[in-house]
Image (cartoon, rainbow, N blue to C red; front, side, top):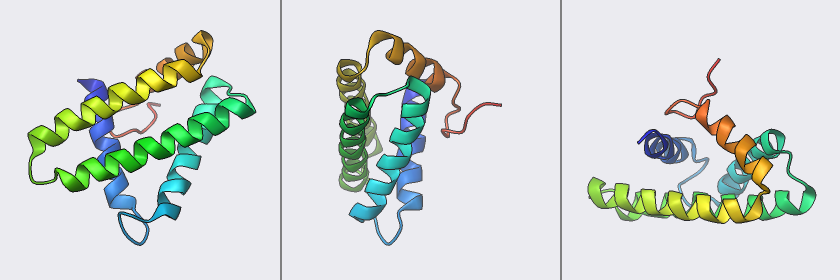
Length: 120
């Protein structure tokens, strides 16, 4: 449930912070880059992993934005689709990271609040 709230908070934040519109590719790319930089710091990604994770993050952010747009009128379906997207994202991420990196990433995620703000 905590992860679903984190994902929902991320999705809401994405819509609220979109630069010149929800479909702004530059804004999505900038957010994917920022997210990947944080992940690279926490999980010690190598260059190849960084590029693959950045592409995965861009796909995930694009999918989240699409789900929020398409299912804005039906919160139940939106929540199910967001949960499915999150599951798929974590599955793909697990294939890209080494076990020690996945543990480091998971630990950093568990220190986040529902709004995606690091706990202090």
